Image (cartoon, rainbow, N blue to C red):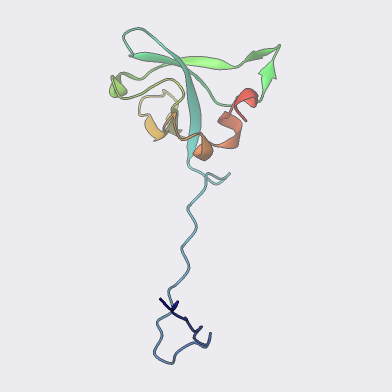
Length: 118
């Protein structure tokens, strides 16, 4: 059996060729963001309250600065390691939104990734 020979076509653009536009970049979390992001560090047994941290890289007196918030809106859907966000005007921490899941470490904001996870 004789092997088939393939010829390379010229790399010229045809006149009727359709140009595919480049993908638009995904939006990133920047300083102009209207939300403040927190990482869930611990959850209560009933999953109605959580301990959250806004910056995993800053330590005050060797400890992370954390706070406890009510996340009863997410009972059964939020997990330890998820990133939640609050609108900047939400001073009472009442309307959280889950923005990143624990398994998506590559998408987490840089300040919410622990140094040992990098």
